[in-house]
Length: 176
Ligand SMILES: O=C(O)CCC(=O)C(=O)O
Figure 1 (cartoon, rainbow, N blue to C red):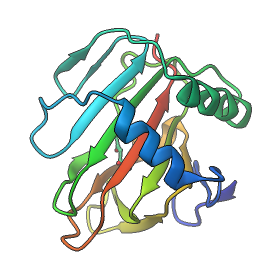
Figure 2: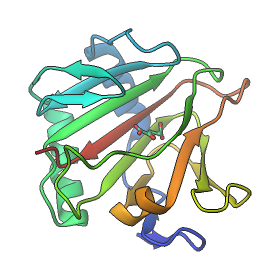
Figure 3: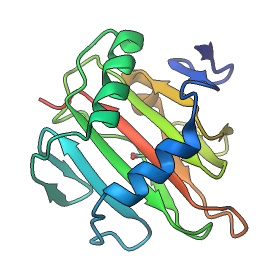
């Protein structure tokens, strides 16, 4: 895990998943996507989750996702009870600036993101100084781990990149 130079509390493993394209294809085929969001498709596994105004019921994790969650538990040293997956079918699919709320998360735990598919940039913007922007490129197979302080101090967004190929982000949290 490489600490991110400008974002205290964030670490990146560039090659966490050994065969990211197989996992991408498997999940793309297996998942029935939720279409309630305008800018991307989503799916939630594990504990029920209220995310961005949408309620997701409890759904068992597919074995491949469960295996990944257990590996991430070893890295972050706390339980993972939910994986919310975002599917960006086109480069224009995006996510606006936000920080992840901790109201339903175990305090002091992390939010982790495994990226699959086309490379995209996650843009961080300091809450206290909006002109302070840091771009973190997320390639397929990478794992980004964010401590709670990252959400306290920064907002993050996935801006549109019109030429970018399809991408999935698998997010992992300890939801109470
Ligand atoms: O797709 C990404 O990498 C960003 C995911 C994210 O910010 C979120 O799920 O809250």
